[in-house]
Image (cartoon, rainbow, N blue to C red):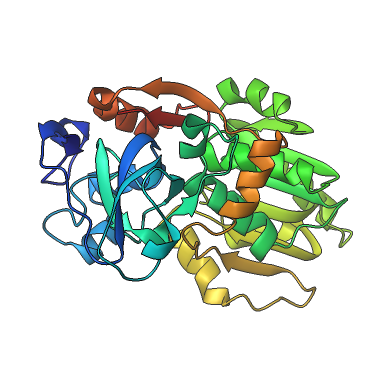
Length: 331
């Protein structure tokens, strides 16, 4: 089979398209023919050897074949173990393999059956590949952590990527009264088309926070929920932008911002505002997202579908932050 591997941390030039043996599924595993996988910012972080990657594997990558999102078909079932009884050869499956060895940038992957779900009938396999990790972040941030309620005002920062584009749609689906989306200027038209009621260019976000802080002088704030996928602002700015009882959820960003939020331990302030770091669970909300996408209520934004040999290019584009929604790799 063909697979894209890397043996040393670095840039996209470290990736190599290689021929490798088709893996055999072990106990509790199934072998999946990969129809499509998608690229996430986590892939980029692992490729570059970020701080968290090196904590787990200081010298060499722990997962030489990247790709956590997988959509495909079961072609073999291992000799037993958790979850294997749930699948048979020919089953259409999908899932986030970030706790099951990764490996989606290949023609086949042997992975834990427990990391997969049955792909809903009517859900296109290419679209399915764009959902698990990004959709899980959006669902868990807005539903599980923020508990967004109808009529509330939502601010989504970094809204133009995979998770953000789903979060904008999901917020509108859940009945948010206002969805303000922040990202690069080139992505704002797309975000309006997805249902954002207001869009703000990232370079102008200081003005947005200044306006929100101004309204907070009366104790009201502007937003009920803020979800930041690229957090880097002082905690005080988020606090001033939130209404009493508001919820801030950090999905990703600078380590300093993450540490500040983690230090609050989720304890509410004097006016009931909470600040939480999303500890994402693989495949959290995937069944619900699958129903929404299959019904047409949500649709992942896919900028381009690329062949396996263009995976290095896909990683470079994700690293540059210019991708509208998602890039999908179709082996």
